[in-house]
Length: 286
Image (cartoon, rainbow, N blue to C red; front, side):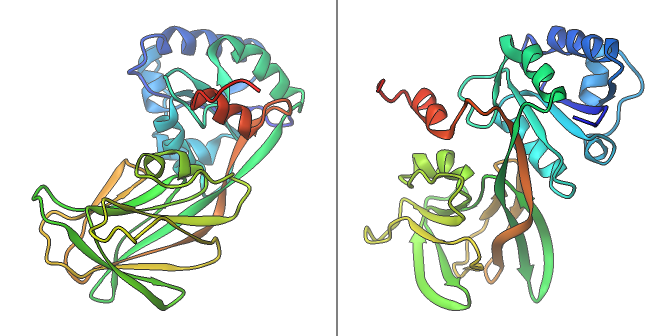
């Protein structure tokens, strides 16, 4: 790898992060690698030269993520514009996105510097939320956009259009629109299918639909999806990657389509998607 600049993003909730971070920074600096620390990482090490997380992707050539899938989703959003490669080190439990186990951290970094890796490009979702003809919020996410009801028990109603064509009026507790990467997240627990990330598609998964014939729907990745909240429901939300929430009201439209940007995950040739599925979902041995 020609780059000599690595940005490090961490999640301090994992107890072993501080020691791992200290050791990996020392290891990288001993090899004359330029290390760029996010605010959280710098604070953990007692250093003063940390950057805001949003600046990391502008200054680094690679992002090293020490955390779980939530930290990876955050990194994906930060890296979206430049699509810089991300190497995830799993410090948590169930991780579909983090490629490297902690005990393999240093051999994996050696392989990255030796260009012994592949880039796994993942489709991202571009989301715009419109109210009275104006965009009130927008974002790019890797996993999913979720429309959900407020705290009251009643359902919400959504008008669904795909490529400008009316599909259905959905009464449910909510709707998940996910990328193939997000198919193993919230969508899976709501009964959605598992989609190989190489399949360029979007998945619409209803959450507890009022009509049992409303089933998960897979559409081409190029299609534009418009979801209009037609019920008067105080507290309804559009949530981006489970991390950014936007309040929506009757008449608001959430527009979702494939982003021009891609998340580029560093993978190693011997690992494959089905190995990850088998391990994480505890499917039987072959």
